[in-house]
Length: 349
Image (cartoon, rainbow, N blue to C red; front, side, top):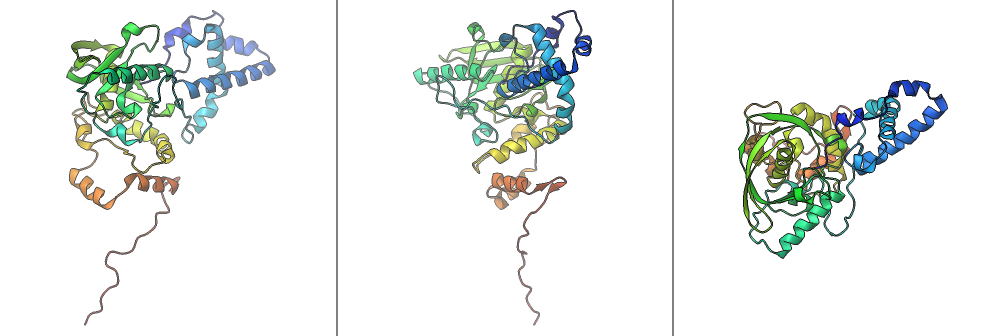
């Protein structure tokens, strides 16, 4: 799970000179130059981190505020105009220092599998955990699950503040269970390191308090009550171990909105073994229920329909890619017609 966006409160701690009045004072040529610089600066940050503005990397609050103001005024209308047809990708690093593992991207099949319980709490597990924490920081995240590094294990690591200099907040979670979800929930923005596009984030409903049980890297059992953002991070990473991704919890409207960007990742995936949707039974039992549902989302499709569909479609990811290639502005087009089932009619005797 990537770091959350910067709180709006930070923007209040700046120069008393309002940005709107300053923009009016600046000469047009200087404003144009500064807008271009600000645009390239913001584009760089959006492509290389998952936080629009990271306070750790910027000490000049006034400069940061100026960049955001100019970016919004000059590039905002253009971005809003083309936001429905373009996808600004947030690419993970191709490699990480201190590890040979990389972050897996949707729709890789490991992201849809239920992880295997950990039984051996040995040096190999300690090494994996250490590398996962390193990758989490380098990817600018607050959590990382084993399926995200191509390991189908009941394991994830997290640090709710996402800072290396706060190692006391690091947690290694093995074989977790969420015993109880609180009834009070909050819908807040979530994204994922395994979804390359910043535009694949959206509101996700999570319980504000959870009662959890898990083992640490040494096998020691722990029971805790988690609140607030730490509870959200735990639930996000726990979903990964069940083959659930954050956008599986979106409302139908939000899922439709980000689907074109998911289609980009599907078309970029080079293999034919990708899994696009979660297990229907698992999805129907999500807690708390996804936004727009009161008793949990129903299965994506009837079990009998899914079974019959799987018999007809030997390779669903390949068919999806073919459909995307033939997609027009009004849906899917250019599908080849198959031969009729009956063949030639027999002549009546």
